[in-house]
Length: 169
Figure: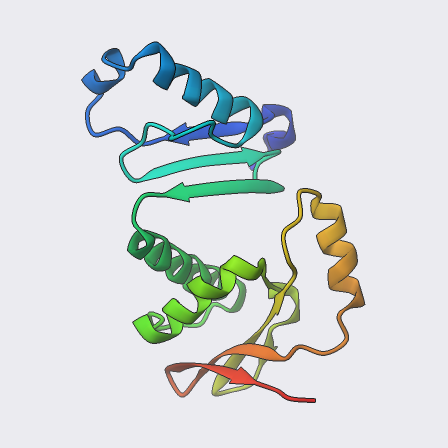
């Protein structure tokens, strides 16, 4: 925890089925990996089995490429539950597939979940969600966050059940 994670710089990884597969990469595929590692985007197709991940400054900016959207939906759901558990120390059930699917689809619009604005009661947790669009500059996302005065969508965990709650107004 005392490490200077910003000193690490960018972090990039892809998964492979077996280590021996790395020895069989063509120069073109090695070039794809190097391009991904330096520019955070592929030229054609990143050689991966399921995931390719790129993070700048330990997560300030990151990109995740997945081969199967089901993996992404599961990952997104697990991260939300894990983060809420760490912040609230409450036991929280898994997000059901129908809610997870809507969240996953919402990421196409630049999904922003503001964990600093969780609303808690004895029986519920509510997490505000906003579509922010697509940014390369996280400072702009934080500026945009500060401008949001009303959240139209909330992820709610009430009486051990997940739902999405829309507020019109």
